[in-house]
Every structure is written in C-alpha cells, then in structure tokens.
Amino acid sequence: MDEIQKKLTAPSKASREDVTGRIISYTCIAAIIILVISILYFITSRGIATFTTNHVSLWQFLSGKEWNPGTLNAKGQPQVGALPMIVTSFSVTILAALVATPFAIAVALFMTDIAPKNGAKFLQPVIELLVGIPSVVYGFIGLTVVVPFIRHLFGGTGSGILAGTIVLFVMVLPTITSLSVDALRAVPTYFRSASLALGATRFQTIYKVLLRAAMPRLLTAVIFGMARAFGEALAVQMVIGNAVLMPRNLVTPTSTLTSQLTTNIGNTIMGTLPNNALWSLALILLLMSLVFNLLIRCIGKRGEIKS
Amino acid sequence: MTAVGSTALQPLVEQAAQDYQASNKKVNLTVQGGGSGTGLSQVQQGAVQIGNSDIFAEQSSGIKANKLVDHKVAVVGMTPVVNPSTGVTNISMAQLRDIFTGKITNWKQVGGKDQKISVINRAQGSGTRATFESAVLEGKKAVTSQEQDSNGTVQKLVSSTPGAISYLAFSYVNDKVKALSIGNVKPTDKNVTTNKWTIWSYEHMYTKGQPNKATEGFLKYMNSGKVQNSLVHKLGYISIHDMKVTKNAKNVVTK
Image (cartoon, rainbow over all chains, first blue to last red; front, top):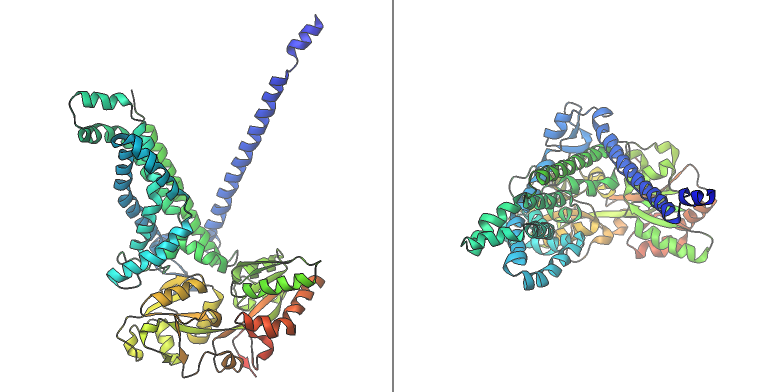
C-alpha cells in the first residue's frame, strides 16, 4: 500500500521536467527584467545629471537653440539647447512616415487583395531583402547618390532633412508594408464577401470596408515605422549634415538626436557636462520610444476587430 | 595590454603592435579606436593600460592630467582643404580665421570664384578640431556648421561639395581635394618640424602613473628608430625625432 502511495505522490520524471522548465524560463525572464531595469536606470540617472549636477534648466535644454556643451554663454550657463535636434528628429520621422505610408499600403493591398498569389510570391522576398540591408549601406547610398542629386537640384550642400527623409523612407517602407499586410490579412474574409455580395466594386470594397476595418492596425504599422525612423542613427548621420542649426528648409544641414549622439560620444569624457548632455539626448530618445509604444498599445486595444 | 582612443593614431599603433607582437610572442596587445575622449577617460579609470589621444590631457576637462604620464610618439600636421573648384590655393591666417568664424562667406572675398563657402567642421571635442581651432581661431568661436566625425567622411564631402572647406590630417589629403597654403607657407612635413607651419599636434600615448614593464617595452619600441624612421613616415605621420621645436599644453612653442 505504502509503495503504491509513494509511487503516486512522488514526483514523476515528467513533473520534474516541468519544474526544471519553469525554473529555466523564470530565470531568463528575471534576467531580462533586470537588464531592462538597469538600462532604464543607467540612461535616466546619466540623463538627468545634466539638470541635477550641472544645473541646466530643463526648459533651457528643451527650448535653447545653441548647442556647444563645452562652452559657456554670456550668462555663464553652458550652451545646451537641444531644440534643433528635437525638431529635426521629429521632422524626418513624420515626413518619412507620410511618404512611406501610401506606398506601403498600396504594396500591402496588392499582396493581399489584388494579386494575392503572384504579388506575395514576388514582393515578399523583395520586402524581406530591404529589411536585411544594413543601415550603413543605406547611409552610404544616401551619401553618394541622394546627397549629390539634391545638391544638383537645390544647390547648397545637399544634406539635410530631405536627404534624411528619402533614406528613411526606404528604410521604414518594409516595416510598414509587412505590418500592413498582417493588418489587412486579419480582416475576416466575410467582410470582403459581404461587400462584394452587395455589389461593391473591388475599389469600393478596399476603400469602404477593408481600410476602415484595418485602420487601427494600419496606424500601429505606421507608428512602428516611425519608431524605427526616430531611432535610426547611422544612415541618417551620414546624410543629415550634422550641423546643430534649426532647419530653415528641407535642404539645409541640420542634426538629429541620434546623429549627434553617434558623432560625439567618443570625444566626450564620462562625468563631464558634454557627456551628460549627450545622455540627456539619449533619455529623450528613450522617452519617445516609450511614447510610441504606449500609442501602439492604446490604438491596438481600441481597434480589435469585433466579429 | 590594451590601447584605446584616438582614431588618428590608431593605424600607427595597430601596425606597430602587430610588428611588435611578431617578435615578442608573449605580449598580447589589443588596439581600439573610440576617440581621444574615450582613450583619456578609460586610462584614467585604469580600464586600459594605454590611452591614445590627439590632445594634451591638460586640455581636456574632466581629466586629472597630473595622474597621467605623457608619451609623445608622433606628430600630425593638419591643413585646410578646399574643393578644387573654388580656385583658391593660398590664403592668409586672418582670412582662414574669418572663414571659420563665419565672417567671410564667399570665395570671391579671398580671390576665388563667386561661390558660397560651405564650412565642414569636425565634431566638437575631436582632437583634430581642437588642434585646428587652437592654431587658427585664437579663441574665437567657430561658426555652427556641418560636423563630421571622421577624416574619411570629411575628405569625401570636401571633394564632392562645390565651395566646401574643411581641414584634414596630411595623410588624408589626396588629389581630389586642394590643400591650401597659409601666407605662402606650404603644408609640408618639413615646415611642421620647424613650426613654420603651425597647425600640428602631438600624438600622445598616456599611461596612468609610470607604465608597467610590458607597457614600457612597447612604448620604448614605439619610440625606437625602427618605428620612427620607417613606419611613422610610411603611414603619413611625422617622426617625433625630426621635430626641431616643442609645444606644451598651453600651445607655447619653444626651440
């Protein structure tokens, strides 16, 4: 009797595996959580040092237009005005998303509704290829092809927001496209069938039913693309010009948050103001990606297709 | 043993380290870039044995220079370069200063074509920029303009942008960009050694306190005739042995 009881209550091999599996996955999760928290803590503590240790006012940082962290202005305050970089970062991001979205949705519609078989077969690898190209290659093409072309058309140096937008357009296109494809595929077939049964043409179906039903997820796709554009450093740095000046138009050299970071981080010394100021830029980037994430969650929750 | 820092010095140290390790099998030397600031702060923290820098530790804020020992291993000359289309080959120091502070904005003001000047700077805090500004600007502030983070990119941009001006280390000057003479003095190694050409800087290898034995061995090798007389010239630097003048951290030159 005892033996049977023992046999039944003692942990079996399978249940032991269960415990091991649980331990492994919890350890991994804990490691990742610790990693994320320490990254957040590190960037935040470094980023706010500009304001706590170096006593730069937050308002001056966000609204100032002079960026020379090494030198003091007439009032003896360090010149750390990040406004030109903030404006440029947002400009290239929004412009790239605006230009890329129509193309991306058109390609996505082609792949899901217009020519699902051949379109997907041909375009899927093309999109995947675009994703796989490293950003330095995009930047190099931008520097050798796009920048001279813009210089030829508009004069000046050719680098600036326009060049950045063109390079980012190509880089976010595959992101937005593949997410848009998922969005359109998620619209139930009976939505399409019902619309067609009512006598709507294909264009009417796409315009009145498909795009509307998929709208929240399409928006998510666009925001994902924007998040990618906002954080892109290398390619943008090569074509933006890296002059910390307010952009007067689309073809004057200017600088984004990321390009300023990559250009200067190696030349500054840990713990000094020029270094802290760069961490503050990194903190802005971190907060913005948080905002993008929240937006995606918010839209995603509201827009689930109810059937 | 690890040497980190200046990208301007990196090629020389890399090559020398390779040769040194070939004859000293026990030594294991890693050479990395990262920039002068990284080199100075890492050697100060004791994270690496050698910090490579284009500038004196005294000129860098946040570095306790008295804790570091300076080993000068080479000299680099820098020259203003322009796009060949500007039609300018010689310029005065005052004109050069006015261009980089934004007072002169068209090439015809200095005897060139009627063409807008595009100033391309190096990143703030870069060693090349610090050297150029201390020699040329006399403490005035440079005009805010394009900033690039490497000699290579600057060379490419100057050669392709009409009206562009920037500055490069001698070894990066090629036939696609035009190196300017200043007050009819040509940017040559010989003029640097006598300080007739004033835009130059030392390449420093800093150690924290006196170097240990292995590090000292390598630094001695860097200073030996084998490196100074062949490798240094081959890679476009100027040998520290050829210098007829010295410069201190306050930019005072003595014979």
